[in-house]
Length: 355
Image (tube, rainbow, N blue to C red):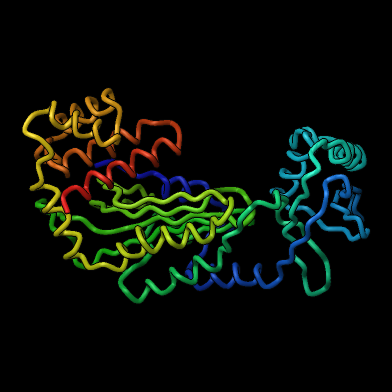
């Protein structure tokens, strides 16, 4: 088992205006954004950055219509123009506008960009995102709508230190949700038992991939560190191609089915995993993990060592449960998110060997 820090990081770093007291409030904001959203496709050379009436800068399209920037969309246009955002923010509005426009006019790639616009009732426009046309958007409100249905089934945001709402976060560029279900704690042989929890995160403007993680845990402290967790399902979808379709298929297959399942189903899986021996000797387990192309031989040997070191906590180091726990512990040592996700999925595959 391992400790999960994602929720704690959000708890420690999110500003007051990014915190929500309920999923309903969060959904209302996301739906209002969707209601006012419009998209436009345009070539980079047809865009200009010009001075605005408030002494700032804004984006002007080929029709002459102007749109204000968010901090995020300005960082995107600077990236397309090959200009350093921090440098641009230190220049005068006039000089920054000329530099970014020069960069846009000199992009050699003729591929068009897709603009996500926020059109207010007074017809003022803000550009929320500038992406390639291949960007596959998953709307925040769609995900939040699904999550609201869980509140009547025992799922809630765990309490946290401080006077500000915690666990539900959304900015102009991303969102993060942390929910738990402590009803009917799962018997894993310990005095405390385990409860169920999940993270959900994403962005409709290109800031982050779309993802979810479902896990068992011992307890959550006031700064939202998740202690003694075992990841049971994890998905991470990049916003390319049919990302929206892929995400909902993965969500229904891996996360939603687990979230909707009963505690007794999870207890049964744990007991089967503890009873299922993957080999009589350490060499047998190394050969099994390598032959199934789950790990390299070096990684498999490291997993066996970790399982042995933590057998006083996780039980039989040759069981599917002990090996899966060891893989989860090893994944947390990787500095790269993709590598951690891959190893967490490997741990899930090992657990499924007990079925």
